Length: 299
Image (cartoon, rainbow, N blue to C red):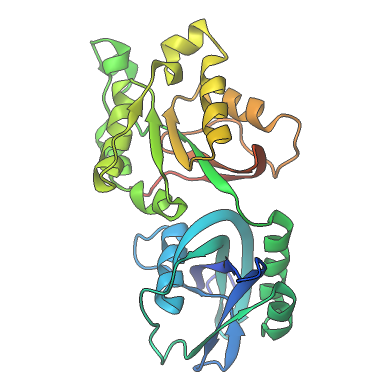
């Protein structure tokens, strides 16, 4: 493809639920404009994150709210004059649909077994995404390891380091975190008691009407004295099965990730986080199933 040809970015999900006999079903949509059967997906709006787009498109094209799980990869669809790059997630449908899609966009929704869905899907790339979904399985819970947003440099701050606040860019990053983590249906937010961590999570927890939990176990000064305190903290959250965010510091989070995943072989992960970047650990029955890297919000 010519480098000047446009690339359209889009996002979607394998939307699933359990049937009355406890079997996994996948939602397929029929698009009358193309007369095809596909997974729910759509183009990014301006300044929208990929996962925020996927979350919105699932609601618009199926009417269902959903709790998101692991990333499933991406598919590239070529069309005359360009291509479309689509990233997919696993997403569990919650309750009954809250609305109906635009019939000009989606005129039918089918809930099918995975094998039926594979046969019904029009495009081979969509079948591959369903295969990835089956590899991960269902019923995972998210634990987000989030580095605080961009803080003032140490040389720019005269006070105690734990009181060092966010820089202007960090304040913008903090205000844009909600759309990234809302799809995971976060139940608890835990944070280091350093000011730069407190200010990172404050806009998100305020929007969610949630009281954050601050702990010195997630702080740099505690880590210097006790390397296991943060690990014990994270393992307790995993064992309780709560979807949660831990907001902490770069010296702590990479070591925490390595300890939590042990010798498991996941896709290549850079063992360092820049400000406002995160890893999302998807776990089931105390075991880490998948790890996704999340970039910082655009500023």
